[in-house]
Image (cartoon, rainbow, N blue to C red):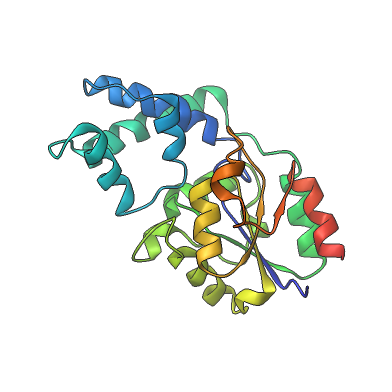
Length: 216
């Protein structure tokens, strides 16, 4: 396989922030007088527009204001991230350096908006590795629809057959698979093997293993 570009999810894939969402979403929902289980919080990983608002209405009723809740969750997230710090997932810097040295293009394909994506990558010293920053806010529909990955391929100017996607959660894997891109699945927070079986190309324990796929 001739890999010319690697498209990375952000939270839970490159930076160790998905765990914070698993804390702040239940707290947010409690603030608004409801309850969120761990299973529900896990379902939200990488879930984009318009699917997240629809999911919340299914759980909490048509009158639930997703956007107000999301704004409150953002505040809790920023407070927690400021307190605990934003750390890299194992092998993140090493794999980006490895790809850069081989002139393989690098882009994000994330559900996080551009402002926060750029800010977080700058904070952890990774922004300079990226050729393109692609966020779900730049496309019509978020994950699990394929829009963000098709857009990322277009932005780096590489056919999807020559791209690899790297994801940590089912909605992201579904998105990349729907776009027809071979996907490396590196589970974070929960191993959802049964949900994504047959959708990914390779399953790995960490980003360090990605080197072996590139060298082949």
